[in-house]
Amino acid sequence: MNTIVPGELVELTPRVRRITAPNPGVMTGPGTNAYLIGNEDVAVIDPGPEIDSHRDAILAAAGKRLRWILCTHTHLDHSPCARALHQATGAQVLGRTAPQDGRQDENFAPQRVLEHGDVVDCGAFRLRALHTPGHASNHVCYLLEGEGLLFTGDHVMQGSTVVISPPDGDMVAYLRSLELLLQMELSVIAPGHGHLIPTPHDEVRKIIAHRLKRERKVVDALSRKNPASLDELVPLVYDDVSPRLHPVARRSLHAHLLKLAADARVAETADGWKVTGNA
Image (cartoon, rainbow, N blue to C red; front, side):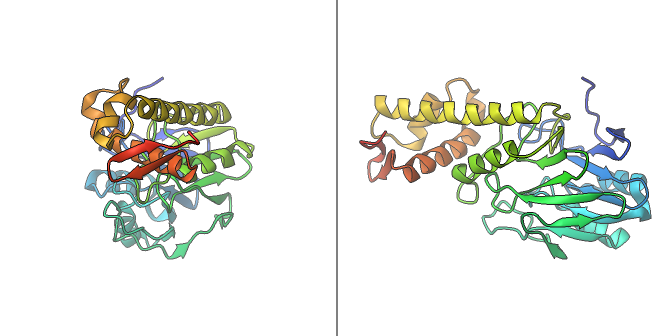
């Protein structure tokens, strides 16, 4: 598998190209992928962070042919460059409005708000919006109709699990949104970070299994230390993860606990989280 090089234009299919932003890191892997679809009129999915060199690379590849700017969600590594691209080309901005949780691109202003099942007709191709909340309440995946190629943003990432950060992140919604993908005919996943995933359903099943395994570790940890605080649970539940990642893991742990509480299997008390009779 070739190394992803930021700024490099990579042809993935005759209709789809990828440019990765120069923002590698623990949360972003090799960087945020921007996908350019179309050979005449062009759409870009996830324009990425507001970095001049990244904006210029997208404009060099698409230029005035850019007609549509679609965002999977409004985290700061996915949508901020939409504004600069719109100003440069007049392309229509599409997506869903930003939640107010302090982790969003508050300047994102979609000219068309997409609902589940909405189709963006781009002439030579069509993109269908799938509302997939979980990682973010406004998260949308885009299906390239007729090709089974699904642009998943942070709903499914290659080589990494997704962080679910309450209150906007929701583990119940995330698992439900993953199940939605299993009902669809898909040929390949184009994730927001990393390489193409050629076995979509296998990957989704693997993610669901991983989340449920982590959930079992939460219940097991609480059976040994009951009640317990979030900080006490993190090293028990994420003993297979580097301690430097525990602050991030703590967010997903909170999401797991909230799901278990919704299932009436745990409860939050004044003394901490504790299992109930249903666990």
